Image (tube, rainbow, N blue to C red):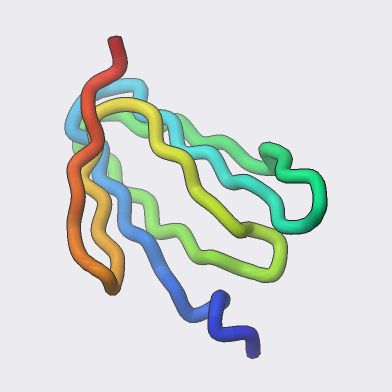
Length: 75
């Protein structure tokens, strides 16, 4: 298994309407999956052979093996 497949990201929405967007790998980076979280909802995402990046829009707590960060509110 690819080591990228072992990286999990935990995203907890701090406000309603947080968007979590998966981006593809390869020569053309594209959106391939999108989820909308409401306050208190938690999503566990994983980097895979198809997912190279995860974009978070809105106020959320993001936890990874590298640490924790809080994204800013949408304006």
